Amino acid sequence: MKLYADLPARRTGQIVADLLMLGWILLWAWVGTVVHATTLKLGEPGHRLESAGQGFRDKLTTAGDNVDDLPLLDDKVAKPFRDAAGAGSSIEDAGRDLVSAVDTLATTLGWVTALTPILIVGAFWLASRWRFVRRATAAQALVGSVDDLDLFALRAMANQPLQRLARISDDPTGAWRRGDSEVIRELALLELSDCGLRPPEPTISAD
Image (tube, rainbow, N blue to C red):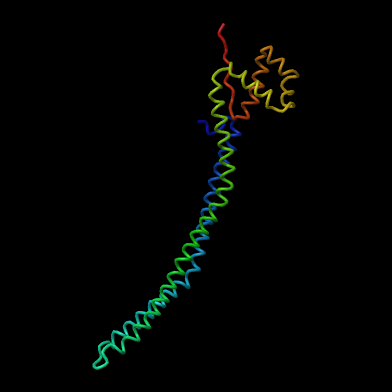
């Protein structure tokens, strides 16, 4: 699998793009944590409510225990205190529910804030990188010899803009039919450049 181009300028651009994508991910991950932490502060009233309810309940329960089993009165004095302590439990539960709701909201907002821009930009980045990897890997498998350049020369004549072909030859098709190795190599170079590849060095036959 070919991940990066052979051509230095394009390879540098790909590496820079990958680093920018990594920076983008880290940036929005940090923003997501900031949003999460900021949203959690909304739960502070819930913590205070929970603490107040717990304190109210404990004090009334303690007061009820102190007057429990008084002579003649039995637990008749303690019962109103204990009943009122139930209101403290309700307040404590309400505070706990508020804190739980804020925790859920903070987690959701944090993930949504971080993932939305990461996934949008990442989808374009991944599609671009995947197209290159598929094309370059397939092309690399075919560039095994100078003879294979005919294929890339043909693809160049089919895919490249006419003005680019004209800069190589006034009659690229005729040159290809005549087997003009120089024109074929230049045509193939156009297509290989789009794939991020260099053509193989021409073999020098020994006389």
